[in-house]
Length: 193
Image (tube, rainbow, N blue to C red):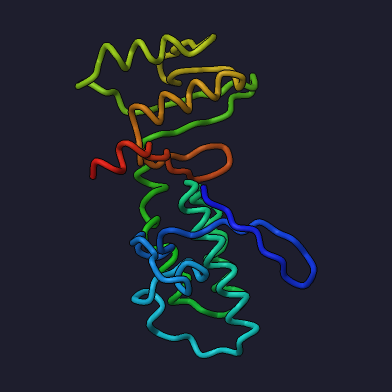
């Protein structure tokens, strides 16, 4: 993730660059859109507000765009709620949410914490890659399958689980203990499309 450092008001901070619009997902190309986290088409309403408030809204949309890139959909939804409640920008908030309206209902991956401290994981079965998919699950340390619950793995095996999800479900959405998330798409897959 590219970062640039800048000094503002004698405070040094790292700023992550928003590469795609938080509302429609299109790539951002001009500096103003990158700073805002939203492209010109999605922001064409030209919300009339004082500059200091516009800056606050831009910070929220930028943070949402970065969270979207990182697959942290819950943060996107939280930022949209702030845009709506704090500034009354209902249409902008709805645009930010629009891409994710049905994710919670249609999430293909579900991860729940069990009282034992382990994670119960349900995913679609990959029939087209049946043996590789089964083998990948079997390679996760201390994993077991419990009918009705799904694959159960210890928290320590989370990196292996994440590797499996990135391999078989790139770009898929899921629900986890911390809210909605998106499995990243590996660079080589992005470049083929």
